[in-house]
Image (cartoon, rainbow, N blue to C red):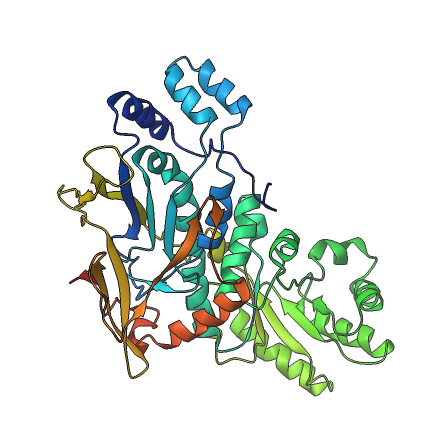
Length: 436
């Protein structure tokens, strides 16, 4: 049965995955047991940590990773694939086992965020899908966590849906809520993942009315005094006066106003003064307009109650790449269910990899993360460390044991475990994942 919200196509891959599989079937290595890992070699400059997001979405995608007959027909029409490959793909269903870091956990350079145990051929087919999901969701979650840090408890609204691909927008809303954003403007994300949504009106609504005050009055009548009025369609000070007048006629003060232009530092102070002078001390001020973590930090001590964040979260400079790569780390030398896997590794300059299957642990000392160590899979882990891998997929079905709400709470706990120096806006990791 198709999982809700999953597109379910196996052709979200690169051609070379399919050509490799065709050749691997011919040479006989496609059926060999193998282990693949996903990790980041480094973090973007100024980042002390990254946030894991997307494994839960990925598990649902893996359950639907099958080739339809129309997709097989397309591949056949290319005239470059063997009959053996096409038959193999017709029957393909991913039957491997996947382990991952928990959603909301933190990753460092070298952290094996995902481990896939499967046949070599199956692992080839999954690479692009795995990296597509994790690179996008981890990048958004990492940027959003930094914004949440500097917002200091003020309301955060994700509103980047109009700045990215329609499905990426839904995933971005999920990833930002995971790390602490309060609401999203994206209705599909609200429906699919049961996220709280927010939104009132745009400049077009004001422009369509005969005057600004009439627009505010119509909005309040429709949605109540708690609605947020957008006051900068024309001139901000006049907009606030008209918002106050419309609310007064209807029995109170606006619940909130939003400012989307001008020098937000100056306009927020002026707005607060104007509101307070007119008895609207309870009216909240929300600002938006290409905000990133650095701009939010600059505004943190001003009378602002909430931030609407869009472009810089989903496509802007805040959306620095997660840099995840997908690499083979072990493979059996012969086919067979019980054949042992042996380590393999690249040695190329600047892109060397670590071979062998490992299990990751984090050392927590007096409530603070001190180290991340990787233990060979057949050796015991440290007795007082936290195991980082949890089951994600097995027996043809998602096996992830946590809800998004549980992961949101977990994320706040693990972020609090980080040394303060790793949470500043211009920092470096104080430790990296290392093998012992």
